[in-house]
Length: 234
Image (cartoon, rainbow, N blue to C red):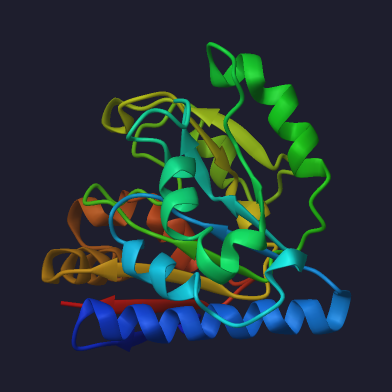
């Protein structure tokens, strides 16, 4: 997997500053080249420090659109909402001028809201300038969960579909997710992980050892369209 480069840091704050600096560079480049920039980020607890550092970066945030790589099908009032996390930590300070493009719609199911989300996504000027992925202890990334009901479709590199609903035993709520081919329409792709356990899981995934050979994140690591930069700290 020569497409993967790992950057290791001594602690979460050092990683957060370095990754925020890199993402800001990508956004500035997008603004300089096209007059606008597009960023997709992950939810969960891991990126909190990155969001805080990135929110204070000096750039023309009014020309930046921010979306999520995936979302739980819950409203922003729910503590598990990724949109809630992004708005509370990333879209603050200088970054408060950025435009947020949500993946959730006020419908009972992701299937019912899919047309609304597709319309929003169709208006985005892909490619992304940067995409930041995370990874769960079960080897999922975005909402590509093991045994997900639409996992094969989401990972199909020949598909033109950009967003899909996803249900899986380990996912909790129903989800909506960008597909892998959509996320690979990016100038830069980052995988942010923290802790010894996830470092070992990622190593096993890259080597195809045991159950890890079937982890969905392996599809990201094995693709050859976009180099993957892994940012890791203990």
